[in-house]
Length: 410
Image (cartoon, rainbow, N blue to C red; front, top):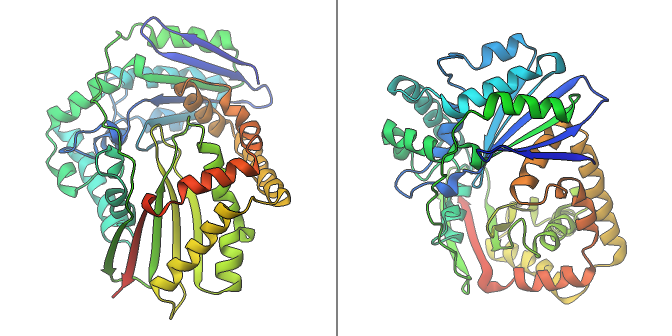
């Protein structure tokens, strides 16, 4: 892929990829602010601001209406590391996305009324998704169990409903002013406009925004976990569930892809080891999954499972450890490695066939310092050897590196 790059004097980075096969343009802007940049006493701010970014400015009191008239689709997501916004629209209207994104980068309405409206929306989301939903508090419990000092110990939605309810408007404004700066953003453009045109519009709409220092709080380093952590909770849920996490490398660390390969060996669809052995053959679980977090700092390898009726937690956990130990003791057969590689490659090709997804991937890769990684994922994944998988498993699946939750039905 021929990606072009340009940086404004105020620090905003532009990455561009021409795609003449479409009449659409995908404009993606990533801000380097997520839940990890929040203060312990006011969590959920990054997610609240994501909602507020659709609340409007003086120039565009309604963010959605002009985009709908232009035939555009827009949305956003927040995670622990960054907040990502995208607009997909016909090429004839593409400049509108540059205009509107630049306006809300510096002119967002953050008065008492607008903040309170979105505060209520986020509070309702908190209740529906985390408080009133079966198993909805698992993420919060496991993060708090797994992390003791790093802000990954709380979810994007925040630690407490009270934080969203009580956060002063001036705290929200300060968070916006500190993090929504040109130097803390990557603008990614994919579609049927030239680099020259994208560069011209970037300069036209963003160059006048003053450079501001993005003052971020110092993030503590999580100490190496040496002892297994356990917790049991009882909830009104349909069935017993078992959750496990293990500390793993960051997205840019050398251990990231071996851990990713392991997650696919365990849970590569219905043919993954855990499903094949523990669900189909031994019938200890009704479902089981394994996945990793792609975090800027060291994250987590997760195992989610739902126990079959009559199976004890102790028996279920022992069966999982047996499969983890197999990976530590024996190298993965090359045929199995090839199967998961092929599946990964297929998923990547499909993912990058979407201009919207590719624009987000380019922005993230640029943010992490290597834009080429957006299309070299398959190459990096394929370089992982069976020996590296075994070595990674031995480090990952130490008993002292595990956090275990027995989630019991009442």
